Image 1 (cartoon, rainbow, N blue to C red):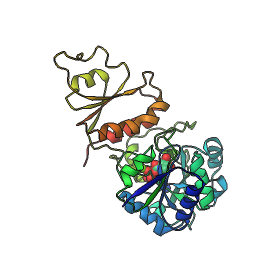
Image 2: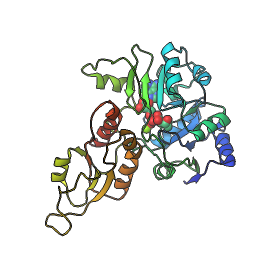
Image 3: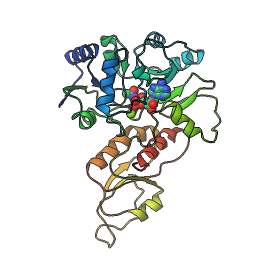
Length: 332
Ligand code: TXA
Ligand code: MG
């Protein structure tokens, strides 16, 4: 088992496209996270994704396309709202869930009647789609339940042992940093199945009691423990976080947050921890971009716990809270 990281030059792109057409897997960058791609119309190729990730067969896979025309060819009905949203958000971090066309293999949609589709906003992904000439089914390029990869090296760390001779196109760090917003447009009003960084301007849908559970059933991939590091992760207000610090912890805090709140070097009570600093001005887009990177850095450095300073709340922080909560949910 091995993986090869390569710059996406002409030869590498041609090889990647050829591999996809030949039913093989290819890892590639998107603006959200790296994807593990297969020809979406080839059931055997898509089966390799499930095997590589250890992904439950109940979790459907997003299909990536290069154009709205290509998206329309994959669905039974294309509602007016999809036109509007595609015009506003594509290429970009928004996945639309639509009624699937019959020729999409069941394995892509986990046997369900709908398919999630998006046009990624990354030149390498778009060029790969063009050259491959087929829609690309691609979940995040990590083992199931791991934090998604935002750098090529993360893909190698996650999947290197699980895919033989995996080709990984290196497009640098992902600009958005967390997975796309998943929006079901088969219902009216549309429903957010997974929050992301797409700025939606939808009529507010009432948050009914039990909606979280209903979402799980509608979007079976939304198991609570997803995006989880090996070390237990706790989200705490800064005052509480400071009280909790133990030797060997990893901290993810805002720059300046700890000033004057913990013992100085040499003072009694000072313990050794690893700290990753976030920007002091709480910029949600920046936070999304570096979140998985920091979680991976802390987790790989072998900290015993990851203590995260609670970020602000509000609509632009919904996706970040969603990922943090999932990372914090205890293992089964
Ligand atoms: O940003 C992203 O969406 C990345 C990049 C590679 O595009 N992909 C990604 O895929 O995050 P994945 O498989 O890790 O997450 C896809 C999510 C899952 O929660 C899945 O359940 C949901 O989208 N999903 C996919 N198709 C669906 C469908 N037909 N109905 C409901 N949910 C769907
Ligand atoms: Mg994923």
